[in-house]
Length: 323
Image (cartoon, rainbow, N blue to C red; front, side, top):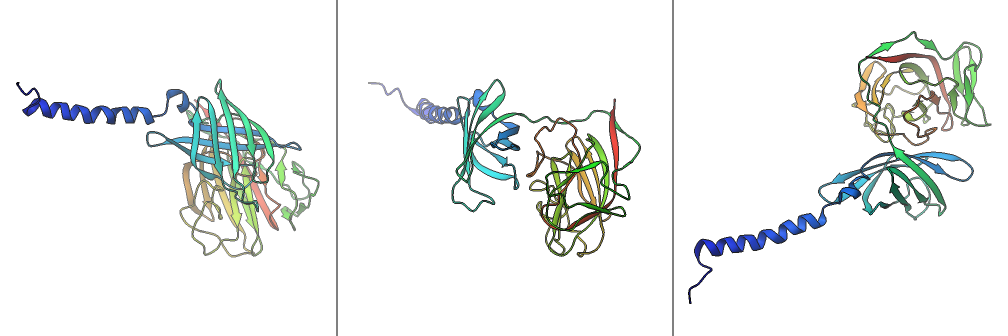
């Protein structure tokens, strides 16, 4: 009987028998097109019972089959998600606690339908909240920016143009120096802004902490970090997202400056005369944001709930996109 599997024909059969399973395995472990629709950035709104809180989620693909991401709750900073489970429009992940004294994971369970998210978040405190979500806008700007007349946001006598975030308003105006002598409420401009340049000067005592929230959503951190290595949670960082290229903090008790340019999502931070963040993209809202409505104008908010802080010479120059 003649041997049909000799020479080159045998080699071809062996190769095919190896390739077919490999191709099948790759196809089997790839995400479906439907599951891939979860990929992207999501602005979330969480009903916490006594208040409505902002939150944020990013999902992206790692390799061919694993979805990973980042999550920002109503406080704290962006937390990494090691694995996001997505199947037939159902989304689930769990992450360990950040600031809560608990050993319970935060558990997120959502449904993606008609390009909208909804579901529940079980926090590390064991409480369950409902949420809704929509895709975060790209905030890309076309054309050039036309800079308008500068606006002095602080006068020399009172808090006109500002309001406190809560009932514990400790803020006072001392001859043009906006002062929070102790921890209490944050303070917010009445007016809202879109793109702008912001000049602001600040001073803190040893160990203190504050921040400047742009559009009420993106915190540029202020903290007594002199001598430390740069970090997104330290002075000049976009809290939990963008790390400065060097630490330029002065000693406590010295006046310091930020010159910040925000156009869409793109931010440049000049601190004490040095460019420490240059035209970088802010992925999403930071912890403590006023809301998650990234497509809308927002106020300037100054943090007053983490320790004593002073501000002066707060000057904002609005920008308008020109086609």
